[in-house]
Amino acid sequence: MAIIILMVIVIGCALVAVARQRRWLRLRGVAGGLLVSYASLVLLLLLGEGYFRFVYAESDGLPTLALENWKARYWHTNAMGFRDPDWTSREVTGKQVVLLIGDSFTAGWGIPQTADRFGDVMAARLGADYAVINLGLPGSSTVDETKTLQATTFQTPQTVVLQYYLNDIETAALSIGLDPGLNPARDMPAWASESYLGNFLYWRVMSGARPEQRGEQSYWDWLYSMYDNSTVWDIHQQQLDAFTAAVEATGAHLVVVIFPNMLDPLRSIAYADRVAQYFAAHGYADSTLKLFDAAAAMPLAERIVSVRDAHASAAFNRQVGEWLAPLVVQPALDAE
Image 1 (tube, rainbow, N blue to C red):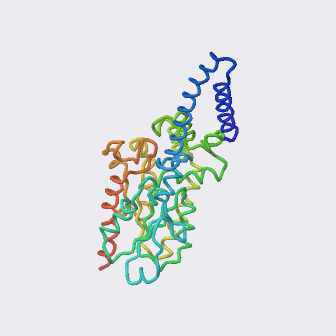
Image 2 (image 1 turned 135 degrees about the vertical axis):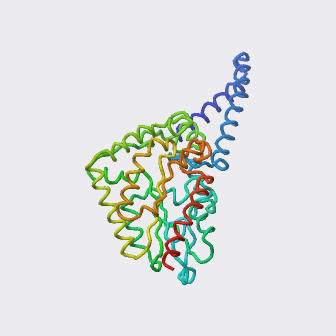
Image 3 (image 1 turned 60 degrees about the vertical axis):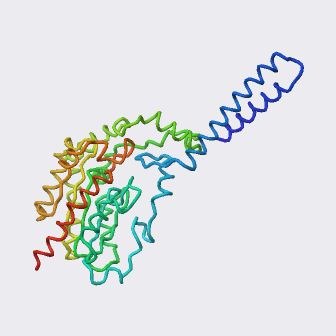
């Protein structure tokens, strides 16, 4: 980046020098015209850099600088690193404690206002007798989620809501050396990591306008093949066993919500169903919410955050929160 800036300065100085010299008048006129155009171009680039550095912010599934702006503006975490308030013992005492455990879908990736996340919508529906604590962390796997549940310092929860996404099987695959090999920033040039304008142009030219044009479909092909790999699926079931055992150790009721591939929910039915069947076999059929039909019924532009962020939109989150609330309340009603 420093080399580019130096080149801009050198070219500008050279044009100024030629435009000011008096020996070659014709060349002087040409240089003067070029200097005006050059100065205009540099000004436009500076304005563009300023806009993308200080104004433009957008969530994405890629390591863009626009995403860093978005996170700085909207992503605020508590002392434990979760995108939730700092809960105190006083705030949860005497309430039905619900722990939300999941990945970026639970944390609300791409959703500026946390009130629009499905967990917050559910909490509003449940009312003041419930304390809904969001323990969602982007990138969490089933293994990570088990550790999160075991490490929580809150009083014993009455309900644990597990948000499952189909990439949760990835750690099982990685454990035996099966790696999708995705690292989109690996070959990114230095100027694209230092210039906000350059970063914006680099990712748009490289990745296309829509998520399915960025190679994510080939990733999904790999992911589905992991569910069809009996060894990987067996390992993943053991991971799920560990999580359900951790929930049962607390005495809490388990509710599961399974998010499909939001870009192509119908194609992911077989794999989401396989996960649902696992939980049904362990006694959680009535407290498992499958979302592929709901996702398929909503137009793509409405169900995802944007063409560059395939996380669930605020509108889809609102539906999920409304549907989850009765699944949390029902066990308490049954106990009465």
